[in-house]
Image (cartoon, rainbow, N blue to C red; front, side, top):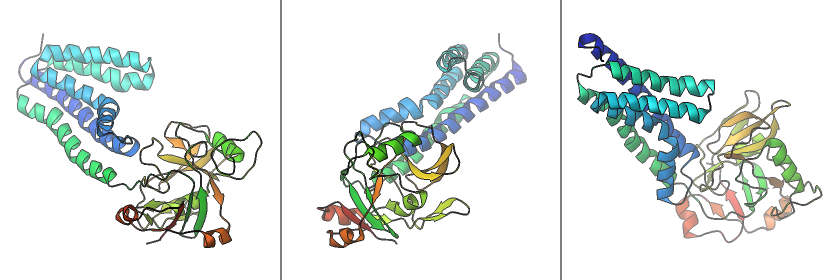
Length: 334
């Protein structure tokens, strides 16, 4: 039995407003998160599946349930209740998951059951059209941005020089993993890396290490140029002339990793990490999500740099036109 007249309409619009808030805010967060932590596959189809199957899944449920409730009120109300039960089972009864997701869905189901929707066109715009516009608009914008990332396909050891820093960065492998690593594990692996950085030795060789936060900030790049990073030790903040991105020669845009550990500690339990966009954050040393890893470095002999064959990297077009034959990248500061 639904409440009629003005009261029923008010109840319905409260439900629609809540659904619209979850759908739109969830979509906004999902799109931003998708192009920040996701969209790393080489396959466009795989990236789309990841976007809708992970980052837009929750707002998609709210949108779907709301649209059905607007069109078929009682069916939509029942669907909200079913989603609430499913969310509770998924979160395993955790308080945060229950009250934010399960309780909200259950409350919406009751509101839709009792309410009366007078203007369905406006309701559809709020819960369906606006999220779709976000997906289209922000998706195209960020899609173009990540598509323009430079990836030279060179994932071996790289000697990178620029902005007052000269370091050899480990090749893809144990010294540059993609599977989630704690700070302690990262330091342990660095200490046991072979000279070429490709294998882990039984004995500690101590040839490789984690970069300091200052070294990591000053080494960041964008489109083949040094980003002009500066680390302010007093306020513990990084600033850049150009915003860096997930690009060669430091990053591999087709891997999950978006954060690296640095050797710089903030306390006994925390150390600094650096994002591919240059942001620096303190993290618990035992934190090890799949997107947080490291890339080991070792010092470069100045005489070795002078004798090496250097390749100036200024822009993706320049690099693609003449791909470096060696592993040295002299990154110019803008």
